[in-house]
Length: 137
Image (cartoon, rainbow, N blue to C red; front, side, top):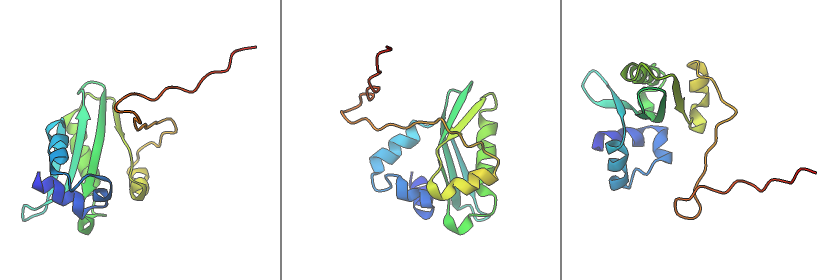
């Protein structure tokens, strides 16, 4: 868990993850299906990819973090390649990009989707109600 936290903090992804909530970070790791770690020649972790998958149809890469001092060396792309190797039968590999990482994913050949959605439950964990439809005249 400390390795995961350290890589998040050393990357720009730490800005959008609860790096000071150790219990939540532990849960995030415990409920992940695929975790791939990149290490330098000395064995220090410098990158991590954390994903959730059913191993048959869909894989969601929740975290792709590379220590800022090691970015631009192909480590992120290699982490994603190893993630695919861990779940080779999957047909849909998905992720949400951090704003600073959009060009990385475009350069790596990922398809940008216009039809992805995100919601934040307002009242506990209920799904938001759809907008009211107008009656057909």
